[in-house]
Structures are given as C-alpha cells and as structure tokens.
Image 1 (cartoon, rainbow, N blue to C red):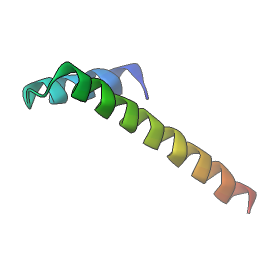
Image 2 (image 1 turned 135 degrees about the vertical axis):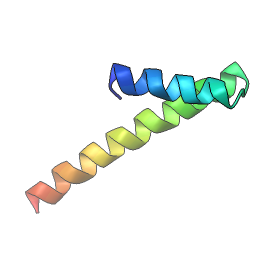
Image 3 (image 1 turned 180 degrees about the horizontal axis):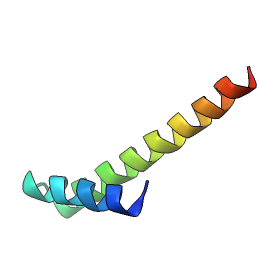
Length: 47
C-alpha cells in the first residue's frame, strides 16, 4: 500500500469512527489484498 493510500484509508476509517483496532485491521486487510492483487497480476503475465 502506498503511503498516500494508507493515509487516505486511515482518514476514511477515522471519519466512520471505528475503534483503533478496527482501523488497524482494515488497513492490514487492504494492504494484504493489494499484495494478493500484485501476485495475481504477476501470475497472469507468466501464463
């Protein structure tokens, strides 16, 4: 996740006022899904 993307994500999470743990969890999920998307695109290029 890019730094600006993480900041935008944190700002959006704060606006919906969840707990800090929820913000961290959502940020972690977002960065994991971004990693998965990168790996999927790499695999597609190899096929």
